[in-house]
Length: 282
Image (cartoon, rainbow, N blue to C red):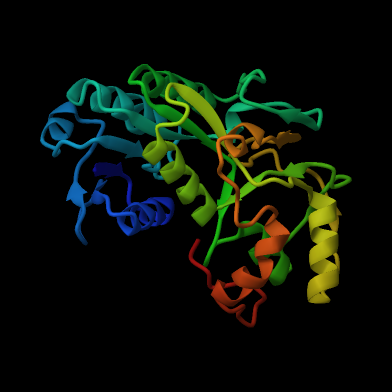
């Protein structure tokens, strides 16, 4: 089986590794190319037309921290071009749980309303529809963390963490490797084609409970309280993302909770310099 992997960043590299370990041929694609990647701007239909064929396509390219224009080009136009150039080839699009804008602490499933309050979220929904129309899948990922990357743990260790208001906001996360395994599970089995799946761990933590536990385990002071950050990239939401549908297909996270991963994460983070800031790149 051949996989065309659109995006070869933090998550994409893990996806490629999981598929290769199971005997798939993987052709990664990135905007800049290099290191075995084909260079391609998927917002350009002619460039997509030059890509090799495959049995499955995963779109996990990043928007480059761009705004609505970047989302339109990379996600909406990218998915559209892939579906037009490779008709009948199932496409899995990695979307985001940020499309759920709930603020009441409720449990959200794939059947819950997805009514994002930002244009970027609405563009993700448009790209999702294109992927589903190909006969493929949508994976709505919670916040990704993993080796060398954890905003929550990095800020806690560096003393930059702030408990927003009363700390009630839930933190919905997924370990990078669990996300990669979930994508392989769906695509290799053919389970749930034309469906949406939340890819999140099994135990969303409130911000206050997460920091309290880290404080006890690492013997560091609890972060101070402060106002919520109105400029969060994913927006300010308060919800618990359910992974029950995905788990019912036979997938289970190796790290059911962020706290389960902490002992493995700490050695992978860059050391903290004398100013209290980490030198971790991401």
